Structure formats: C-alpha cells, structure tokens
Length: 255
Image (cartoon, rainbow, N blue to C red):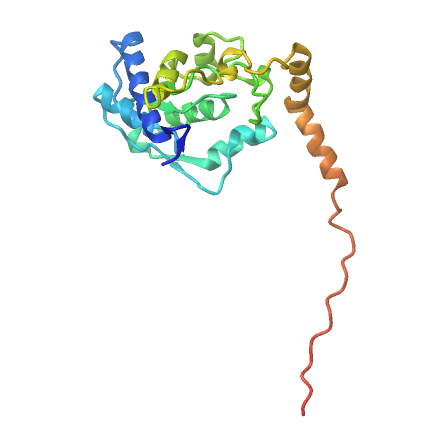
C-alpha cells in the first residue's frame, strides 16, 4: 500500500507484470508454459498480473520461512546459497511434470535464482523459465543500496544466454528499461526522469568517477567483506573470558 512520489507501488508492480507478459509473448510466442510461480514475497503482484495477461494459472510454488533475512546482502556466497534453501521450500505438486515460469522482481548476483531453478527441477519441473520485472542489474549503486561489486552481478558482461547458463534455466527474460519507466510514469506523468544507474551505469550526480567506482569495487567485493568479518570476530570478546559470579540468593528475614 506504499505510495512514493505520488505513485502506488502496488499499481506500478501490476503494470510491470503486464509489460513483462507482453515481452514474453513477443520473444517466446510459441513457448508452452503451464504455470506462473512468483518468488515470494515482493514479486507476487507482478507475477499475478503477468499470469492474467498470459492467460495462465498463477500458483504459489514456494513457501517462505519468514525468519531468514535477505540473502543478497549476506556477506559470503556460501552463506547466501545455504540460506536460500533455508528461506524457501517447494510445493512439489506445483512443479511436477510442468513447464514453469518463475517471476522475481530483480536478479542481483543470481545466487537465489540459481538455487530456485535447482529446487524447481528437483521438485519435478520439466522446464524452468525465469523472468525479472526489472532490467539487467549491471552496475553498482552509489546512493545508499549496498549492492555487490559489479563483477559479482550475474548480468555484468554476460549475454542473456550466458545468464541463463549461469543460473541454470532454459531461458531468462528481463523487463525493458523503457517499459519499467512507463509502468511507473503512467501513474504520475509529472515524473520526467528516473535514477537508473544500476541498469545503465549513468549516475545523476557528476562526482561518480572511475576512481571512485574502483575504490567502491575494492570495498564491496566478497574478499574485502570476509576480511572485515574476520577482523570483527578477532576483536570480539572471547567466549572463555571469566564472568562475574552471580549475586547471593536473597533471604527474607522474619519480623
């Protein structure tokens, strides 16, 4: 129910799903798809309108464990992959013997996407297609979102077929940037421009230099984060440090 800059986030996501469906029909008109399955939670709205536009059933094939945090901001790849399995479980009846279209709101490193494709196949899916309601994320964000270094982004320097191979799906499809912008602008025509640096590499401020991006790259890559975590662990209080004894039990005196 959020509204940002006069735009309903819910309605914009509905629009994104419809535009995604239109692109699927343009680029894969003869593909047989049995069911549309969202990656919970935020892609549900886009996946629902996408399924409606395609005339396909919408099903909840993944059940989310709400006690696991966002995997894309976790520091190490092995931890991220492990937590994807802990975060989501499959409903096998929704995958067995079917060609499934998975819809997510974006693909960052591809860690979650790759594990989900594996889980879908393990649940019996014949084919797995993967769609992103956002365009390819190819560049770092410098305005407050801790995206990984660009070399860790699955879409960086990769073609669609290479991304499909990396995450293990039969094909991958991304939203066009123009369609993404139209999905939002139609709800508030007063918006004339968007900050799209993670998709285009063009930053709205003029102080983002190659040197700054290189420094950011070194600070955000996996090895740098691991080094900081190891250093933090060494500085923490050891578990064997002697603790103060508990206070003596309180005694009630008789009057």
